Length: 381
Figure 1: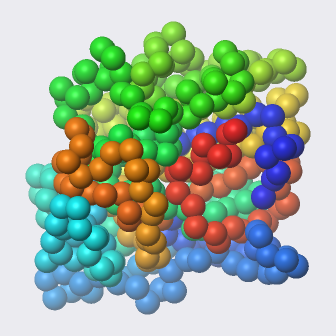
Figure 2: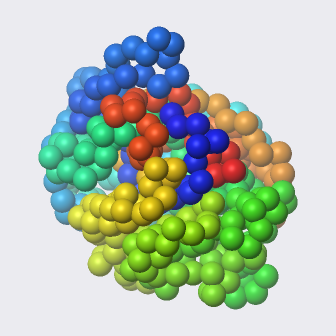
């Protein structure tokens, strides 16, 4: 991977709700292993094709057979992910170790979620096990083959969007282990803002680089980064201005944080956006990835730039790789203000795609090392 000493501008594009197996597991990408000495040939860690889940006496296998649309939003709250990873009978006890992971409950939770009441997925339970054929995601696959793909990148906890995005922005969720209630969101958005006990990535960079440390681009007026203390509406810039802004030879920002358009989030369909939320589909996100890549590539600072494209969590979709242990942030946990389930943050979540783009990275790099969203802080410093 590229040396941080050679990088002047880091760009982070964080998309929505897709697992690694679902997006790149069937891409058959081959290349050279990052970190090996001497470099050796390798291929991405995708499914063997023998993986499956059982539900009501039927077997649902993996395969590159996923096609849109998906009619039911796959659940991915803490209790849903518990079933997906550990089975329908799994029980989580507050402040206790996470149960053994077996990857056996993805179909059963998709068929009947703990947290959603959306029917039976029209009987198409096997959709949750399926992935895209590579030709269905041409932009993502082209970048993964041309630069670097990380197949050991996991969401930071086995839970939903908001706490995982918080980990990406601060290597912590301040104890949050669930989707926040409306009252919590309104408090963060309209009053003080959510604070990290040890500060966010934006706090750390501002302390080090001053007022030109970071810049934020969004695809719409709705922004999750806007919930943080120290980030205001005046800090949010529309994505359409990114390409022209990057034409400046003096673009000073160490970190450029990019949020997609979440589409119609009020109705819960998320349609019309660019986040790749399952209910909206992948087409808009493919366009956004291309737009961001081309803007960075055309920048005068391209030769010293690093673009990180990843997804906040798996969105309920199957992945066959066992999540490993995590080092808890140590700033908040069971019993803290935002902690609902008693989770202690010592278990990583499901694997997600991560593609790293830079002219400093050799073509066809495959990184098998274990990462989670906390890595974004160290890559941006």
